[in-house]
Image (cartoon, rainbow, N blue to C red):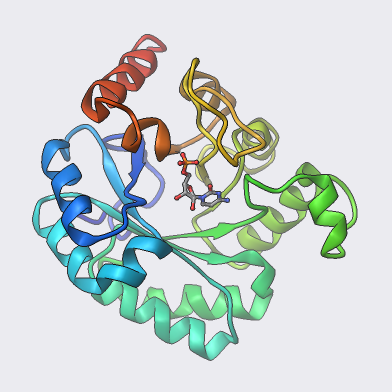
Length: 243
Ligand code: C5P
C-alpha cells in the first residue's frame, strides 16, 4: 500500500520500520514471515538488495508489507531520476536519496516520482547516524552533525522532498523548524539495554517519537535479538505507553 499520493503527510499505520539487514532472501523472508504487516513496515537496504534484488522486494510487498527501499541514491541527476522511476515501479512505499547529491539531483528525483500516480515517499539522507563530528571534518564538512543535518534538511525541503532521514537527536530541532508535515525517519534507535553497535547518535524508541520522529528504523535490536518478535513487541509496548 502506498499513501503518498492520497495523504502525503498523515502518519498512518505502523511507526516501526524493521531493517531487514539479512544476508540472503531466505533469511529475510523467514523473518518477514514471522512479522505482521499491521505492526511494522520493512526496510530493504544495500546488503539484502545486492544479494536478492527486486524479487525480494516484490515478495515482501506481495506479503502485504510496506517496503522502504533504502539504497541512498547519490549520482548524477539523470541516473538518480531513472533509478527512482525503477524503484517506484517496484511498488515501494518509501525510498531515499542522499542529500549530498545536491539540489539538481534532489529535484530530478522528486520530478521522476511526480509522474507516478501512487508514488513512494521520497526522503533524503542527511548525515549518517554512525558519523560523528570527527568523521565529518575528515570529509571536509565543517561543524557538528546537527548543523550539517539542518543545512541538508533545508535543502531537501526546498527541493520538494517529503522528509529526511536523521538521527533522533536532531528530530526536535527539525520538527520545530519544518512543522508536522515533514517526515522525519530516524535510525539509531536503541531500546534500553540494547547494544550501541556502530551507531553513535542514538535514542530509545519513546525518546525518538517524543522528539518528533515520524518513523523509527530499527535493525539489530530486533533482527539480532534471541526472539525478534518479542523484541518488536517490547518496542511497541514502549510506544503504546506514550499515548
Ligand atoms: O541495526 P540498526 O538498528 O543500527 O540499523 C539501522 C538501519 O538504518 C541500517 O539498515 C542502516 O543502513 C540504516 N540507516 C542508518 N543511518 C542512516 C540511514 C540509514 O543507520 N542515516
